[in-house]
Length: 413
Image 1 (cartoon, rainbow, N blue to C red):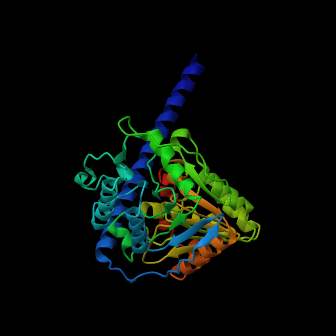
Image 2: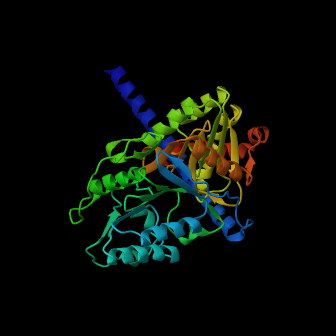
Image 3: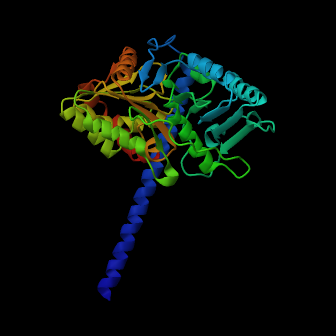
């Protein structure tokens, strides 16, 4: 009995010490976050843009399995083509986005959707409620209309709807990293989107239909599930679905990295790889593949930047090249492996994208498409600085300590 009581007291003491340690750690992390956010806001207020644009390459449409794929590196060109496609719609428009600002660009899209509905086009819209909390709610008031159907993805659901899809009449589709707003047309925002024309548009249409039919309230009509119009594995969409615990975007990255023998080029707005993806990158480098990862020098989320840096040391020691994009927020989510496989989509290499949010990534197995994506990557590197391994390893102890303190937050980002 005495032994049992002693053991119980010891257990309670250990539990108390663990709770105290966790509380102290959480308090330190909260203080560090507050300090970094304040410093970052002051920096943004005092800084002025130093770059009047960024390097771009001319779009080179690729023909893959009967589908034309065209890339976009600038918001103005993308929005112009998206709006033109909406204006030409005859049967239906499917639109889904994470952020939809109530500014001039946002209003242009809203007006285009209303005009299409007035022509008799069936218009279906989805936007994420949480991502648009800062938008004036009056912007999202739509008139009652027999051809207009709006799904506000609710706050209460697990996993945010981080996808960006536009499909017109089942023949034209857009997908990529661009949200909707004035911010994304400026020379201070660099992203990647693609347009599809041809049978592979079904990949995007099917993604929208599945999401709509799963999450629509009863007052909204269901959409027909037509099945694939053609089969060709050279172009396919992977859809992360947290409700069903399906995360194939993560799988497609791991599969491609495990096949890599010559080159891996990744661009990610927020780069916080889990252990499996990090190991796949290290293994590719050990096999002799040239592995390069491009991330923002300063993103729009300062905490993500600091957490991301905590994952760099092992990669740098293994010979992975890490590049920091200067002056401009690079928000693209792309990768090219061995000059034959490429992906463009909405998923970052972080926990939220890989195992938390609804995401969509298009993967294309085609040397011409891969070559164009590599050309875009090389152009981006001309506005980036490579991280020097020796300088990185000799950074101050204070920075290293702060990175280690914030690293556990990687599962939240």
